[in-house]
Length: 292
Ligand SMILES: C[S@@+](CC[C@H](N)C(=O)[O-])C[C@H]1O[C@@H](n2cnc3c(N)ncnc32)[C@H](O)[C@@H]1O
Image (cartoon, rainbow, N blue to C red):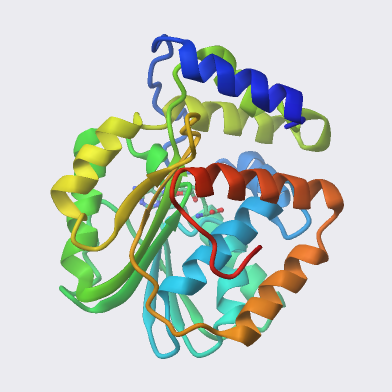
């Protein structure tokens, strides 16, 4: 978003009262082929989501280690997952999604890249029936939880995460937060409308409308997950919320250099978006160890 628009949305969110309401996603599970294709295209490494993927990739690299088994809840087309798996070849990843359409795209993508450290499972993140108690070293999930229909499902998902994670396990959950005004939601959704497919813009709009309120999300985090990590949100405009455990790996200079070079290879406008995201999270208390 251009800086003036960011400043306007920021001021609006600072002063307005809540007027928007949570509306559940029209597609709880993403299996419409056209929408899956639009989402996949926008997400691939040079798409509009590239800066966001790189930010979360760097965060997730802090909470996983070589030798870990990491569960990705709602992996979708595996753009985020593949980026992390490539940088962590000695870590094993399980990508889970309910949508076979998404899992097909994910399977093709990792085959093209010769990644052998990811397996996929079709499954529901609210009931991790194929995953044993305390068997997972780290759980990650990126922009998925708003697809859940209600707070009960969100609570069930958090309880399942707690059940499957080892006591010293790593955790990184990120999702959209609900903004107070519908105008702010639309400003965010349409900020890149000229650079992306209309279906993707609409998907983003529906996602922001379906986002949970930060206080509801935080209350359920307190109930189930507070022993694993801290809750963060972007400053004043909580358009993103994160639950993150403390770092679990020693500082890794080679990894840091790889992440920095991914950043420097992005077009300038993506680097600007990444910088904005880092600033809003940093002001909310969440720092990036591997990106500056
Ligand atoms: C917006 S996509 C995010 C995909 C990926 N994590 C990313 O960052 O690009 C949300 C994904 O969550 C999946 N999903 C929604 N509800 C689910 C559920 N209850 N169990 C498993 N997957 C679910 C959808 O099918 C979709 O692939």
